Image 1 (cartoon, rainbow, N blue to C red):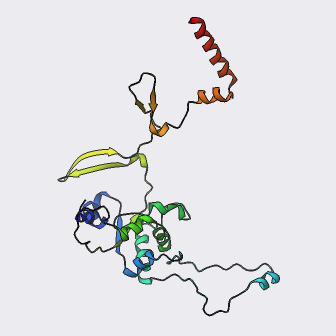
Image 2: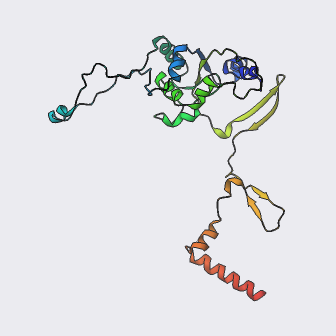
Image 3: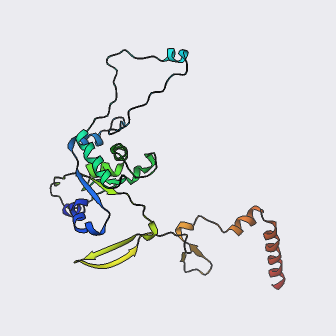
Length: 252
């Protein structure tokens, strides 16, 4: 893979060509100070929140007396940096896309960080939702720090203009997704990309007549009859099995 190939795979490189046949999206330039904030390894303090912080009230005077406040002027206070102009642009873009978006950078989305979101999803409604996912994602960090790690050419790394991509949130059905390959403006291959090994049996046959290995995904499973017989949980199956063995011995 060449570095120019990586650049051609950026969202902003192909989206204008397929704007009419893909999900509506907005591309915003990512300011350098926002990039620096996302790469900061310090404590995760999320910027871009609209709601003021809430303070719990003590239940009693005694509890209030137990609270110790520090008067040390050197006490460090963690505050999130603010990006008012960028935050306004992002919120306007989110509103124009229906209020919910799927965020990504030039190449990757923070798919590995969905678990940290309150909704366990990549569905974002505010800039703080996006920041939380981005700061928790190794995929996003890789886009920033190692975009050309798999490239074979030794040429200097080209300058990258990083962008925040906001895609209109859509509920997609995995079974209805297809991968399409286009060559010279012609559609040459279409195939579904969703496979569930449970839908149909899959076997891997060997040369031996006495061994048939099931699908690798199912290789750790045992037929339920075997489990019932070995544990003795189903007495009727055990009786039937003993009768079968006796009949086989009599036939022999």
